[in-house]
Length: 91
Image (cartoon, rainbow, N blue to C red; front, side, top):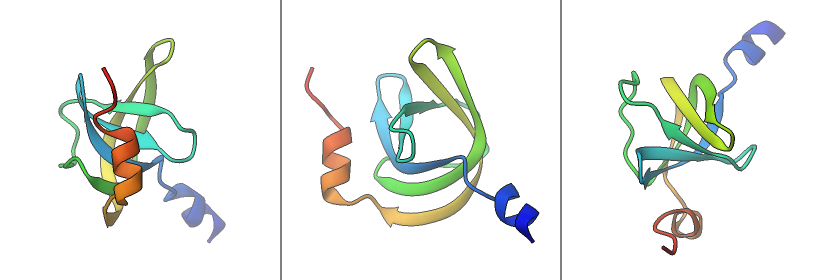
């Protein structure tokens, strides 16, 4: 039973947002912004808060990417305060 609980734990939980490189998710656990790699097996829309299973990578120092394999849970729309603080920042 413990194996199942740990094995099915999500890799990333956060709000999906648009970024310069396409789509990204801000991970609530580590505070890092992961750019979602194209060709992932899931269809995500900006403004959704989701838990995803997949693989994290670091393309360059400080530049993170995520290959999503599965949506573990869809929590619905992001909270307005959370979405506005991460999307469309200053240029």
